[in-house]
Image (cartoon, rainbow, N blue to C red; front, top):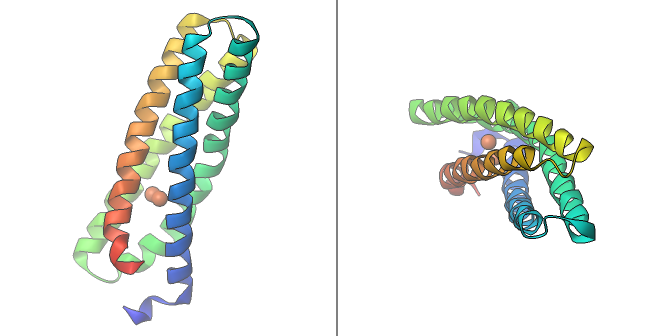
Amino acid sequence: MSNLGTKFWQECEKAHDDHQAVLQELVDLEYAMGSLERFSQGYAALQSAQEVFRHGIHLCDTLPAHFAEEETILFTRLSAVSPELARFAREMSRQHDELRQMLRDFRHSLENLRSSPDNCPGFELLREQGVELGRKLAEHMRLEEEYLGGFL
Ligand SMILES: [Fe+2]
Ligand SMILES: [Fe+2]
């Protein structure tokens, strides 16, 4: 495996660190969404809405770069190692496309929340999207950690 190159190992470590940060942000987002549900009005609701927006937009802003880094270095080099890893890399890239679309939809709902914070039907959709995004992302990262575990 030594022919994978220094850049590969650096990217492996960075991907692992990114995953820890994303998992923490998902916990924070879930907490903020729970708070927003509990406080339907007043200052607490406004503060919760701001937290949902802050964590949600941060995920939407940062994840595409994480996906691109994995595809450019990690998946490209892994694909050359074995057919099994090439299949894994293709499946992870396919999941990235799915996640990118989910992030676009989620950002759209977050922008709606910002422009009309007391829009309850809008919040229901946002919450559903947030829960589904968190579930898919966590499962995706779990798979990457499992496969990349041997390289870390
Ligand atoms: Fe990924
Ligand atoms: Fe990842």
